[in-house]
Amino acid sequence: MKMITKRGIFLWILSALFVAGIVFLTVSFATHGDEWAMKRYNRHLYSNGALIGAGNIYDTNGKVLAETKDGERVYSDNKTTRKSTLHIVGDPKNFISTGVQSVYDSKLTGYDIMFGVYNIKRYGKGNDMKLTIDSDICNAAYEALDGRKGTVGIVNYKTGDIICAVSSPSYDVENVPDNLETSDTYEGVYINRLLSAQYVPGSTFKIVTAICAIENIPDIDSRTWECHGAYQPTQGVEIKCNANHGGAITFKDALAKSCNSAFAQIAIELGEDKLNETAKELGIGSTVKISGEIEAFRGKFNVKNAPDDLLGWTGIGQGDTRIAPITMLRIVSAIANDGNAVSFNIVDDFANQAGKALNISLPSNKSTLMSAETASQIKQMMRYNVQKQYGDSNYSGLNLCAKSGTAQIDSNDNHNIAWFTGFMDDPNNPYAFVVVVENGNSGSRTAGPIANKILQKLVS
Image (cartoon, rainbow, N blue to C red; front, side, top):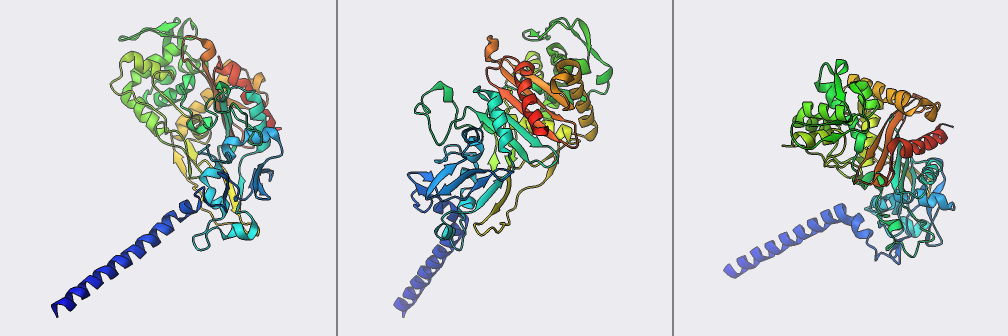
């Protein structure tokens, strides 16, 4: 009798373990099935390590950026388009981790928890994807960079749709260079510089310091600061200005003329706590997500226990701060949109090979980065920058609000990182932009004309 009881208990334990195993496998299949299906040994989807089973990828105008033909993955028939959209579409072997072919591989292949990749067998390829980017504008941006390392990003600041996202260097996936892995020309070629580069922001960061000052120094507009070519903090090394501004300079002119002396003094007066708080509110140090799936570099900002000279350097965009261009694009988009940043998006829709649209959930939310009053004031100041310093005639018809930046890396000006960022204050053309050029010398002289060339094409 005791033997029968022990056997019964043992069978119950085995049954419980069996059921637990079934539950574990079911849950694992439900949560990780798409990952298992996307393994490179799946011959339905991959050939020689390259994705072949995906559906077509189109730009916003319906132009093919990538497709599968006769069991091979082929790309746009335009060589410039293949280069300008590489970092958004992705490469055949998914070395570019932020490309849509990598991030949305299971959706592009049509994976379904019930039927796996049956659509591949049925149609020869998976679901089609339409993006928000305009390949013609991307081509213009790629050509404007003219082989220089850097990035261009343009977004509709009302909808969050990304129109242009170009990173250079790039290469032609239909004719891969032999020296891709060894030449300095292609250094960082698999990095999407708009999302993942870690740049010193230079004087574009004065936008952040200015926002902090507007929110924390009540009499900021009636104040002046002394500039005679440099500022010596109580502690630390001298902070040189880009020019001798001849004495007293106002807040508005300090931003327009990008006065290091004034902004170093403002940053020191604000102090580390207020600067940290504003940087956090504006998203510096937090990731920016695209279409809820693609993640950008978080950025680096921390002035805790910083001496006066480091506070001053940080306030003018030097110091230890590092920022991805997409983060600055989000900040200027919020300024243009009454202080509100909408979710960035690069995916328009998906459809299966029968033409039926798929029900996909894309994030659509709005975050308040600053008050409408603060946004209005900084917008006026950025508009004044163009009118007073950069010249409206150089950006004809754009009604541009902008800020340049020239981030120094070392004593050689040719190694500077050139920035130009801002937006068009135009309800018919609600576009914000960021342009970064490595080894670019000057932001206004190098990145500014690139921005103008692309924006003029966008509105023409």
